Image (cartoon, rainbow, N blue to C red; front, side, top):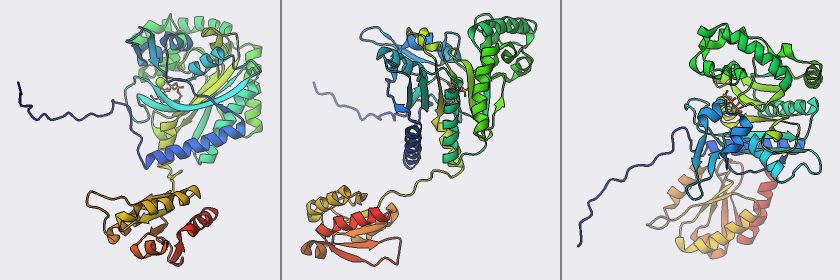
Length: 437
Ligand code: ATP
Ligand code: MG
């Protein structure tokens, strides 16, 4: 039986909350930042690593620690419907890089300096500078125990701010010492917080005996006074830990890098020891941390590898890009060199053959395309050419095509005379354009 299908309004689909589309012209700024970062990594000799976005859930539970914000409440975890595996969209990528290094014996021939860029996922409350899909640039130095590599990473981030023209960025530094030192501090910390039960929120009470260091990382403003008064881990450091911190600050001092020691800085994952640091700006409100990192000498063992010292950082790309946008930095000039004006659709095959030679010579060419009605008038094509930001219009008119020629007309500079070129000469013209760019 033929039933009449009632016209149904199709619901509009939108992106998942907290996950953003990155569209032109903003995407050009993203690409520019990525290009700067690749160039920076080349000069510091960090090699690119690309790991999967999905990892076994156990990697993060073991690596980051069970009693952390990320593992307790921020992970996108799910069961693979086909084989029942427990999987998680990566909330960060240090654990993934370490997993890959162990799995492929990457340190077989000695230490490795690696970097990555890509999306991370955390189920947080979306707000300015805090999203559910966000992007990090990460650098990880694997197999290095000396503080000079901690410092090298800091210098690398500092160089990036400088080259991007970012101002108002402060470096905060702390040492989390070693596990034995943390144990002593832990007892003092528990005693301190137990003496102030009314100052603790529910989460803090629950975490107090599981992982008291986490209390120092609380974002609850009401808890700040009791956190301020807490015993400082710095005061529990032994000689070796102190020397390590000194070896970092010696390099920073020699390089004129300003820093402040922040004894409350603990970071959100359990894997850190000794050096931890954050670059913070005052210009993004409470989401001011644009880069955070530290040493994680016990993470390899935690996820099943051999003991391997390591240190790294991650930059929040959205936050850096917001700063850059605010400062009008990295505003990218229009990329189109030429706009092809084609009055007659019949010329398109020959025109497109010519454009291929121009593009092969390095010129960026935008071609006016036909509509259902054919090609638009010359006038409206010139309008589009102008709006495109192209420096030149390439006119493939009937006269030109009959002669196997193209007319090149400058759109932004009245001093450049119009010229008509034979099509084979056009590629030569394109090359001069590149060398003058
Ligand atoms: P925060 O204290 O702001 O939650 P975090 O300690 O959780 O930061 P890390 O896990 O150290 O952050 O990540 C390194 C950097 O990645 C942060 O300093 C920040 O710039 C960026 N970042 C972290 N979470 C987000 C997010 N949800 N949205 C955007 N950027 C983020
Ligand atoms: Mg966080």
